[in-house]
Image (cartoon, rainbow, N blue to C red; front, side, top):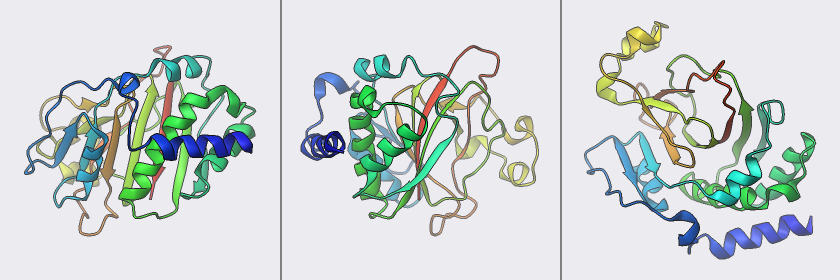
Length: 238
């Protein structure tokens, strides 16, 4: 419990002044305000999800080697869709408990837990401090093969290992086909899906966001079955 407290203090002390040697941002200008997708190299770009008409805000950041080392031993069976409810006051305690329930030692994931805490603080700020659902997942399968829209208000996603979430622009999507249960080939009108890179952080609007019915971000898990790859995914929903 003392370590969990120290992690929370570390998140609080360092959130506003990110370790630039670890983050090492790549120059990436913000998408123009008229775009439904906002991308940038600083965490404040995530707040753009609150802009009218924006259904994805994406913080493009490179991998952090300390976290990559901590996660390298994880296998698909270790976190097969572990979930719990959490809040701003209890996040790290809930995270420690979730790892412990899967027979994983929280002490082995100090850097990862600090980073997860930073992302959680950002998301709690965007979601106005609502209690949220926390999900950790390790998988070798195609979790969500079909392009779909979430029924949530907001979702934060970060893939720490393996290929990231695939998503479509509004211009690419046949929403009638998507809503009717048609296959992916009918949903994609043109082009190829975009994909999150490992460590990129995205916040997306779902259909439950006020005034956003029929405009949630269309996305899916990347197809990896049989590739030998293991994804490590972090998700927060509200």
